[in-house]
Image 1 (cartoon, rainbow, N blue to C red):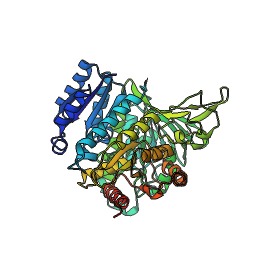
Image 2: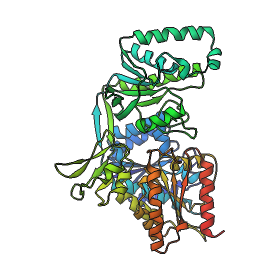
Image 3: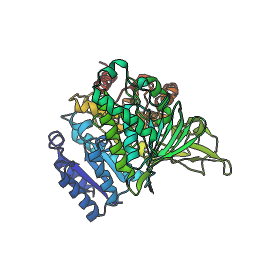
Image 4: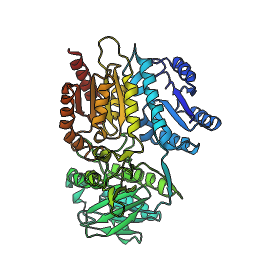
Length: 528
């Protein structure tokens, strides 16, 4: 396998702290092709990277730059990931070493070069231990589901219907009744011209041949992928749609819809976008939010959501990366533990073969079933067990200076990891001996990971998880909480102080809370 390494200076944000030249020399001595750039976000650097991939026939690429979340949640930067895949690298062979948010910004001085090597080595290990994922092409459906006949819902429906899309509008109340979405006081603030503009819009969707309305109706199930979702309504009716636009801002309704739609919520209990700068986009590229602070922003959000959705559904084909929990049928005993564990109903038992199987249209790759499996038959394509163990080994080899403790920070993808990113961007600092390891979900954390961390020399293990009721994967933090007592019992049986394990709830934007918790933990381990 030929692995390439791209080291970005991030306009000197990284290179002012980390000796990039030393990294170049080190990895070239290890036989790895290395390229550098001043700013990977620029078109010139991206073209240079793609040319290197093709010319050197790299089968894997490590990007040592800013956070992977930057590329995954920023639309104009996520395009580079598709370009890398188009250049011939499987999506599961693209790995990141977060040298900006979780090294150069929060750390400085002794140890940063060695920590950079550890983070890069972990990324290399991820490529070496990860199998290729299947990329499936599907033709998208030219249809959409609108949840909520609010002002934004009506405008979004009309835009889609006029563009030739089949539109299904579902509302818990009467369609055409604004009282569910706007107060009389807010309505009084709307000028006459806008009020007049809204009235024909309602008439338009009621008379439009491309619109089907479902008043006083609730959803019971939604599954699938962008371009092809299956929606079940109360009463059993099934809809097939290419995308979904959510047009409700009601905390009570949000709590009911969340286990069905699997969209993250904020601290106030409302659906939240994957990136605060792009308010209509969720982590699922086929689901959008169209909610504003007033009527005008509602309409703008509707237009933005429609534009984003149609830009995908107007394509002839959509590529889907199949990142499921895999099953070793030679080990699976068909016990059904995974079926009971999966919140997304993605697992079932094939009675003919007495083995567990996974529905790729439902699986989100959280890994809760992997940890729950009593025979070890399950594994994650994106974060396999062999990689997790090897990553802990690599990070455990980091040497801290003096009496500074060494902490493994296992950070969930939904909250802990972005909170650590946020801390760096806020200019907050913590010891270099805090070594981050991204995990798909707090529910993915296994007892063996914690025990192995202490075995390879970590003084403490810190788990950053989503706040209660706001888990990225609905019940991952609940599953972790259920296992916490087991973790501590096992530690006591090994004569390990249970205070060396810390579990903290942190929301994605609470970088200050992350730093406060991690620094307090380090002080306690140090004995201060």
